[in-house]
Length: 412
Image (tube, rainbow, N blue to C red; front, side, top):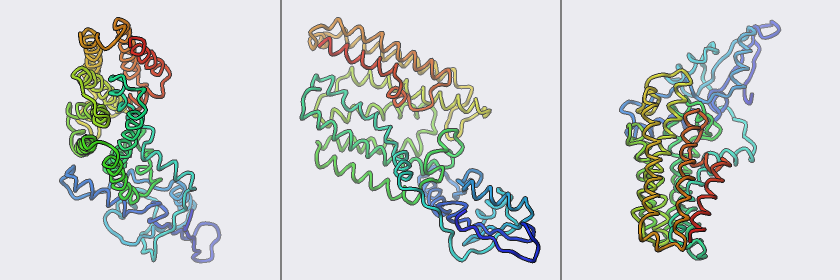
């Protein structure tokens, strides 16, 4: 229990007559209240809230072992004290919520938290940066594929650099977003295990990490890639911040913004490689990614309904009664992407690009199958993550992707 101290009072044996002192800072809360207050203030400054920042003490990441020991000690007849540096309304609310402390007493210094093993810290940082989400940046390669330049070494290397720069920028946003959304994430079935929400990483380190990652991203972009790529990167970051602070709480605008964030990765590939963006690629991307964004939102709303929370979902502008409409819009958008693909294949300029253009028609049923499967799994409650990340881990989606790609290669 770290710095938890027990002092005997009187001459009685056992727990009766003894005092257990638990430090709030660094022990009950491993990383203390300072980071929590900074995060709440940052959220207020981002104009998400019009009120003075108030911490939701019901979901703070209390150390379970310390809390269990304090409750057991008190249940055995001992007296428990919560040692704090400064007693205010938040501290009183914490003590009232936990209901296992007899008194709040001054602490001379913060408790010393037990440091996590280095390997654990590395894993937690990889989770916080969401390195697995970098798979989305593979979309940067799509313009290279569409331009039939995938075998061009110089352009391939440029695309790899663009993926790294974009990934660092995205990780910067993920860290900031997790800090802004601490309270909402702690009420979510899966998101409550994210490092900052769970208290496995100090919030203060996140407040240092996100500007560092952003600066590193733009340094790489400006030093190695065309200026237009940096402009697209800036647009992505601005839209992501706007989404995190405002748009994700506005019905319809949230999923359109998500679709645009996916599509901007394709723009980034075009900019990094100095290629030309075609109307067909843009239209296809918008419809497809809108479908995936709606699938993601459907999964969140369905999860809230399954947890017995009807009505408005926390942090979103959707009601659990919207599920049918969300699924209808999402499936329709996905099928529209297939229609755009079919029209692209029929276009005369497309026919001229391929030796065997008729083979391209095989891509349509493959895409139809995949979109239908995604929505069926989402409807069954089996979509627990971002659909793009799901596709990267799902062997059926991987097989469909390989067949889709081979279709275009065979047509070339």
